[in-house]
Image (cartoon, rainbow, N blue to C red):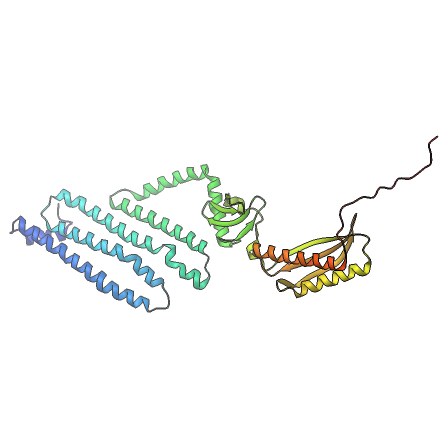
Length: 360
């Protein structure tokens, strides 16, 4: 029964001549040894490694060591308890159960360490220093964490003597059935991957699609959450966003303003020219107006007005600031027209009645 347990045989032979209390004292001593080793390793060696890591230019090594600190502490306790139990003269059936339990706990705490290492918060430096997208970090963090959990579960299943190959084959058949029943979900997941890799927008961007306009609050595997300007939260499937034209207003370099000024037909050409020159000069001197593209021209004869085209861009793309610049320009245009005595035209229609003489 004990041929495959050399450690157990060794302790059994060593303590064969002693009573139960000697076994208990030896087990307690073994556990105390691992407990002291745990304190030495985590309190001195681990602290030394953390101190050395803090001297480097990056915080990644600090975060990785800190993530493993608590799992390593727990692992020392598990190993100490296991060796203490091996010393005790327990029944063979107990040792047969003890071994897979011990391996399961070791797998759990090692996997916990890697799971904590995969936390996206450990890699924020990549975003701050190297511009890696936060959504991309979150996405890969979730994928790695899922893989760690799956691998740990497979190792635990194998530890307890189950056939992992048959289990995986069963998962494959079940996964095929689930995939056929969840094609839309799969399309959304692949759509999310395309959005994250292509990065047409990021969290916090102001976007517009044919269906919705607002600020992106969250990009997940299945959907993207957009907060509209009416403060409603709209959840859009990623497959829909991946197949639609998306306008990202947050990535504008400047913002366009275009409109027509409708002037009365009775306005003399000289007055019209003066108004256009003054409006053009005002825009050229305005500190918030981009000077690269700017037009103020007599564009067309309207149905009831002379139409002046005003076309320019604001330097700011922020909605509130853009509206403030546009308001300031509109007020200055009104002052220019009032100063020149030029009036706005209103939609009107003249009706002429022809007098054909008295009817007979």
